[in-house]
Length: 239
Image 1: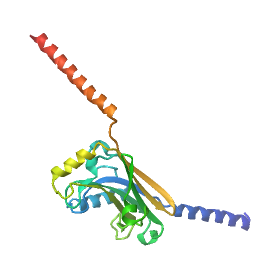
Image 2 (image 1 turned 135 degrees about the vertical axis):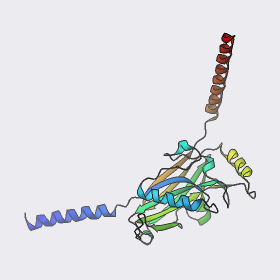
Image 3 (image 1 turned 120 degrees about the vertical axis):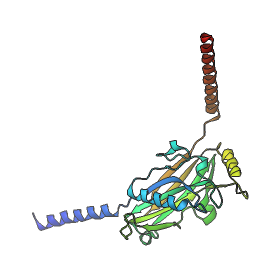
Image 4 (image 1 turned 180 degrees about the vertical axis):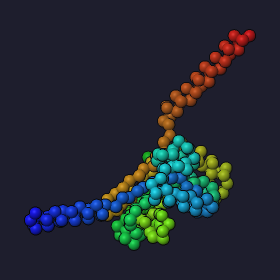
């Protein structure tokens, strides 16, 4: 094999190694969490959730108020309405896990964006609060996933909630807000941008169309009437 040909092979091999090393996975997840602002249950949730995200065992919406949402990105209003501070209600948390990275190394390379389309209206919380739709995370950390004292990657989360029960820290007021807002559907979009490549995760809250809801209710009424009629016939036969 000629020296020139060996150099070509080595160059190609070196390029392959560099290209595989540069590709960094951005893992995105979503779950319903206790209120980070005041709930004593939040630290335990964060510890368990971060650990499962790092080891690959994370289940989206595992803590949803509706068990049927586990394993999906669907949510209920109960999963994202909180009293502003304290232990009432929950908020959605979008997590990002970047193995092999450091917070310092991601500076200037990684940003997040969070928007919510609610019943046809788009809310851009970051734009309204920070003046820009894309921000460098404020809550992220070099994360030691295996407990050996060394960072294995970067972990962080971004939360979103509707603040219910304004000025009235009671469960009844919060429940009233949830019931009122539950009729509206909406999608929440979390985006992470690394080296100008965008990664997306969408959470969905759907409500039945009025016509579908009417048919569903009528179906229940028909089933109820049918069951009652059969029961009455059975009673007549027994007599």
